[in-house]
Image (cartoon, rainbow, N blue to C red; front, side, top):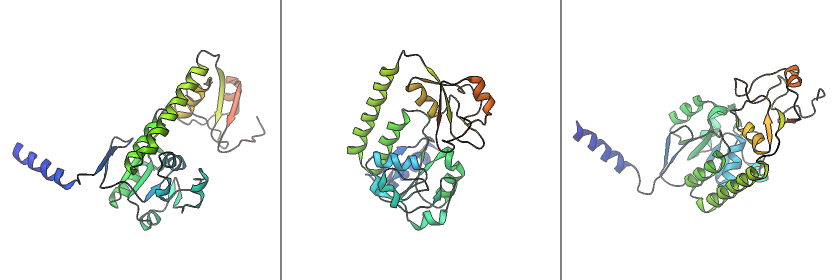
Length: 240
């Protein structure tokens, strides 16, 4: 039995090119490419930004709607939105790597793409420290470490500087609105909540059960925030 197992491992090792690139994604999967990715489809706007930060923006052949930063991304072909994209359009672009958003695209997307024999890297940024980490990993997959590593170090330096700057200051209660109808915010497990804390604030809904809970205007007023921040939709909400 041991002999057969060793034979299998040996054959598997021979099937992987000597210069292959293997990177663990945020789902804990090992993603192996025979060479640095040259044709990439990104299924979330933040992934597009991270690829440009990693020095691999010129490898993008397909993105989703709202991928408008940096400006160079505006002209890249769209394959739909983050939650409603076309598998046919993705396949037609002949990508050698698809970078998907685990919670945003849904893990069923991973199953569909793997079934089509397309290499897939799952991105899932839960903490601020995941941002430079993601840039490093994307740099490895694209062979652009000369750009990705300095950028990751720069971001880590800025995060450390902000922590020192706001450490010890009185925290302001912050309500962060991510959607207007229905009214939604984030709890303490969300990356946005960590950003609020980094800037000297306190998420007034950090104790909410769900990651992005629906709430009422009355519940916001009861928690009496010092500041209200709105993004995405409803920035001009008349009630505020």
